[in-house]
Length: 168
Image (cartoon, rainbow, N blue to C red; front, side, top):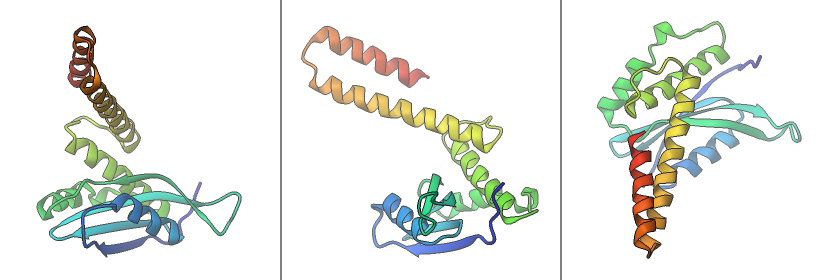
């Protein structure tokens, strides 16, 4: 089992709402502690978290595991996130348990925001969200292929496949 000696909370103000994934990755790799990174842009904010470990090849480097983050949230939505991450219900035996429960809470919140009402835990939420993202990527690829296609029959097939994926 991992042990976290501390958990950092870092807030960063952005001048534009672009490249946030890369910015979060750089900050989280640079600081060798698990953290909650709050990216702010004007009146909206994103919360980022990822479990970290030392690299097996180079103990000077951090390896980020799967990043979990919210969409851009306004203050009302951020308040909903705070309610969803009910601190009274989180395990607090050590920082790892607390951090893990918060990461799971963010995942469940994201699943609920995506319309998945009955998600039991963080692992299930992350799996369902990954499946949803894969489906959306497949639909985007099919739409791109549809734009290039010249044969009517093939266009019909692509449209049917897109509709089938959208229904799931």
